[in-house]
Length: 304
Image (cartoon, rainbow, N blue to C red; front, top):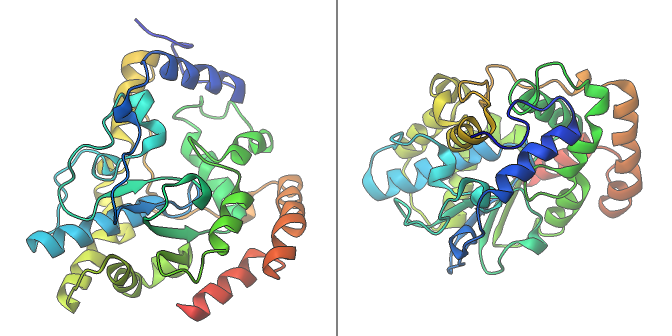
């Protein structure tokens, strides 16, 4: 029996109906919440800002360090690095034993809503690019393709996805921790273009020793080409299965998080771009001293 609408949403409000139905179908259990342990790692970029790439990088790094081999024997990267904010909908035990140490978890949260005492990996991305990427991600999966115009997507973008916060709250939270030894904060484009350096920095954060051959293997597994070739591991398979069973939305929908070509922030409608920039000027510029994301990213890149 289907719940919710029994089909893809055709509006932001209808998407809320479907997600609410998934939440209501399962009674909350303690297993849906992380029981923190010392040394846990939180991969907690904002939505569509490099989370999947860093999940893959983290998992391959710990597996190669532990076993000497890469590991692609999984159906969903978020089974390897569980996501607490969808665990209730999936009825998934986020504290399940992981394949190697340290434990890792996906998140889109700001620092203040994550367990203290962990280690944190965060990639920041231009807000215009996140807007386009998030729209591309949901259009044709949760939402009937073309049913919602990009001009009408702003309310959902501001929500930041399951368990998240708005873009600016997230950025300012992690910007304040950019020099903390428990936090690895970089620009997404830098991490994508300089994967060996990003892998070494992540290894340092985790206290893992890797040689250059291992770094090269991890970089191969984290490249866009490799991840596109294995995109069925990065397409929210667990969520797709639940949505097909309970909402009647086919699991074969295009839900992949990796694309052959990145999103172009220039595709944001002018009125939306102006609003994104207005909020940056109001909230981010006074705190960081950076008038736009390019300037902020340049400071991060210079310290990488």
